[in-house]
Image 1 (cartoon, each protein chain N blue to C red):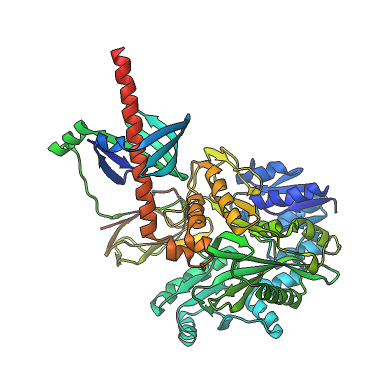
Image 2 (cartoon, chains in turn cyan, red):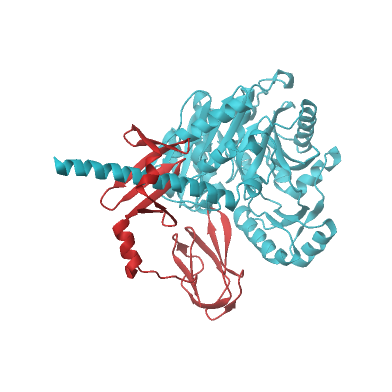
Length: 481
Length: 158
């Protein structure tokens, strides 16, 4: 494998290229008109434009990307996450064109990519699952009927879903019609498949996922868990490894189950098996993500494994570079996703130009970043600017380092989730480890936000007044002189 | 007496003697340390304008624009020269830049508080823009498929 094309943009494209370069493999970037001068475009050995800014006219054009790959004699395609990464049709087309797809076989993607098919595949392995109806629904009447059977609240989920898109919680019957419509429409535009299904909504769960690796020689290992409970709009914002609630026994039990899930679909490469864990530490299989996850760096920190390097070697037909018993958890890692969003305004997208953009640096600090100073944040794509990751010998040390890194991360021109990160990492619910997926709803309330703004406004007002009075004094002195 | 307006929304009045109790130290050119009620705050000075009495500061990464008003200006306002136009929410504007995915209402249509007026897509998320009150749609100033800027006018109610 001499040359790989990265069918993605932003931080993940750069992250993959970094490992490829380290391994002596040439890299090809694809870009849309909006990303002509983006860091990922400039970082690659070769870059090629594949279309207009909207992703369905560029980054989602599978055939076009394959055509480009063939023209440039590319040996393999790495899909990153999002975009075409879990598109079985794309993986198949790549395989059919004799290019290596750095990821699982298209058939595994098809099985796990459809949450309904996934439930079916995993059934015979005796892995606990969330109650619900494992068939797609269209009509609000049918939805209401199921809801009555399993009880409100229910969760409408896109069968092809991911990243919180096409997902809606419904608390009462009157909301079903509008939410079902929104979920179907969102699923159709995001995944090209509008089928949705209904599950019982597990209240106060924790979201814990297991990283797995499988090679073509039949080896499957797990790389422990990542806790991803701090979310907004069902999308993760803060992740960590290890989780503060898993016991060694539960960890190895969930790890074993994750390996079974990988085996159930004949998995290859890096994948993630997601579980919900309730208050009593019961866990339920949620889904398998057949790609490299956004939050993979926390696992890399605590295991010392370069997951992209393993992915590439597995795609080359090599064995995983270690065995299960080689792996030990070392230290603690945290990740904060830095989104272009206003934390204090309901995480609303904040678009503009990065008039100042300086990354924090230091031992144990890693920033997987896709932006630079002076760049505009395009409206066409996911609003994530970067991932801020910190590592410490203990959870407390990783938290302290994270707070320092947040303080030293300088961004002007747009609002970001950094202030929210500060709130999380200082909050007693987080530091004590006693939190669930409702962290935002429970603690980051209107009232709390108002208090923060009021305190900071008061401080700002006093500072401004003091600055003004001092300047006035100086002018008076100047006049007297 | 001074009045400070922060981010055009939060207002606080001070006597100059109030601020004497707090310490402000200059760390570097544009970094300040304010000690208020024994708590230390690091502040970035982004911009200052003595003439307009406007200061742009950053605290914990959050932006605050402070506009100061002194005694004279406050007294003028008290004498009734300040304009106070209270507006009712009839204008629905775009809370963020995005794409109009769907418009659910027509001009002349009666709407209720909470009704979905239109659906705005931004960064791949669909956001329902709902009516803040009962009323009648007076004007729809956007079309389906149109890209809108933040604060762009969408719908007028009456």
